[in-house]
Length: 433
Ligand code: URA
Image 1 (tube, protein in one colour):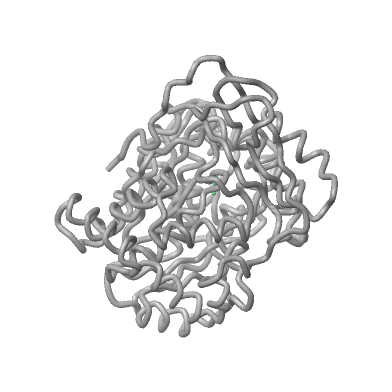
Image 2: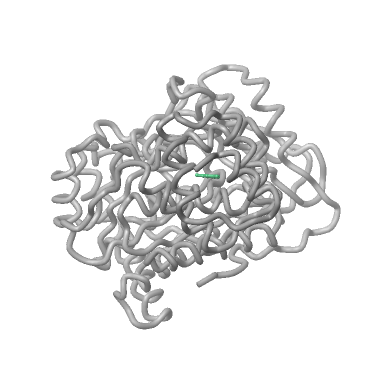
């Protein structure tokens, strides 16, 4: 088989066979096909697209390019959750103990963040002593005993995706739906879950800016999941402003704990509940949506979900004093108030700009080697639709620099104002099954 023939076929709009897809993935992973030929194929896929069968075969070829995690030692139906990424998105940390609190096992592999703020693991490491490195046996034992464990990603999962993603990044071929869908699903399938719930973000702060594109991506991922034997559901949720009020690391953990103690941070709680409902339904824990929602909501109010979170932190050697007393979590030296510059309503908050403001403070990484400062971040005091007058505090920067000029500037740019109250957008646009 020759790579040039595969490129030729796709360039002319042909459908690749399983053998052709496996050939290019296997040989590229081994370093036997040069980047320039794979770049050409990626561009042909970008313009010509892929059929549902081709996309599923590409996903499976990428799964088979590396290790897969065997979760068969865990009792019960394992449901994983994945978000396409958003600013202030800490839903995993609410959803995981909430789902565990009704007896559905959560075995989660999470990554560190490269971007505006930390990933789930970085946020958890705001809690002193918290350990993410554990043996496979310990991970499985923890899930069986406490119904929840979150570990750092180990093993060589979908190495073909890692190589392809890096190449797509520099060849303007990232935003192709079959390529994104197969990239995300290959990692989820290699992680060993029985079913998958996806949170596909849409809006200015999301990877997919329009509802149409977000729905197309969600449908493709649901189709791939089902084709490969994983029941998959996707929620399309809004990312036209950050989720919740906190963006950073330790401050996001504080917000998570407040929600788990029953506080109503409306958008964050609503989306977390919806994700949790979809997860427990896929696990077969309850027969009806309404029953699932009622039971999960009950566990937020009666403290069961909070107790599950605390038990999970304790099992992974975190200091639970910091959970009970959130004021003991890392805090920065300075708290700088950013004031409204106009009278009217907050019309928009550019989530990406808020994320960048937090990153400038040290809440995120620009290179893999950067150290995160868990104590810094942004608290939004006003969100879209709130009425403000000049001089009102719209946000607080938690900083270890006395004068974080760039962050203040970025945050000011993030806020848009209007004279009229803006129309409210839905938080959840659609659930695709
Ligand atoms: N996230 C991924 O993992 N892959 C993509 O292609 C895009 C976003």
